[in-house]
Length: 190
Image (cartoon, rainbow, N blue to C red):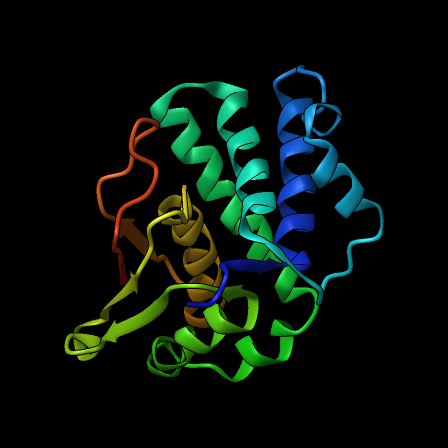
């Protein structure tokens, strides 16, 4: 079994987001409290390099710690997903989203996952695509803490760019006490 990993791009965008979040909450930046391992990795982290999933989860846990409230933390994690996608849109995804349709996005989303994440795999249910609805499930999601709300933000930002209209993304039950499950499903409608 492959060791779960994350590309530097997701970690770097998340660090930038959590520091901005701390600024908005008039709290000290989270980065001084990061583990020595994460601090060392951040010194020369590149967008394309692979890193242990735990480094990204440490940053996501810092996002949650800013509010320590389930609803506010959920919203902050969705915002983090937005920030990760916005960062990607400013790089490799810019041209992709210009030519993408909702149907193609749904079909290609598993490729987006494997481009930036190692561990787990995506299954797409496009049976309701003609009704402007698609479900995407991350299988083998144990250990991918907070990926549900982060995925809502990422997918919502991307689909809004594709459709140019309102998008709704919902995920399975997520809470501070249960941030991960064996499977995570997102339902996207537009």
